Length: 126
Image (cartoon, rainbow, N blue to C red):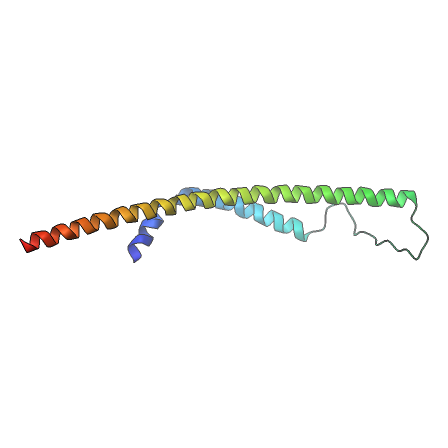
């Protein structure tokens, strides 16, 4: 049972996997850091207190600007997540291709083994 795993380890393009792993890891860490850290240059939004006087037009404008900045930052984070997911999907596709190749080779080897076994039995029976 250990032989197919050894073959799998040889067939998988480990050079590509190892080459792209730091890039994916760094992108994932950046995304985690950005999601944990508050956006740069912004303060926590002040909740709208309806008990006081209505906000002035300037306050509403400032809140709208802050909201637009937060939306832009979220769009940037989403774009980076999409890029990271694309890289992971490409790596996954390469691994699936390697596993598929292994499955085909295993079937071929099992067929060859069966033919050899029949040949050996035939030779011994002669």
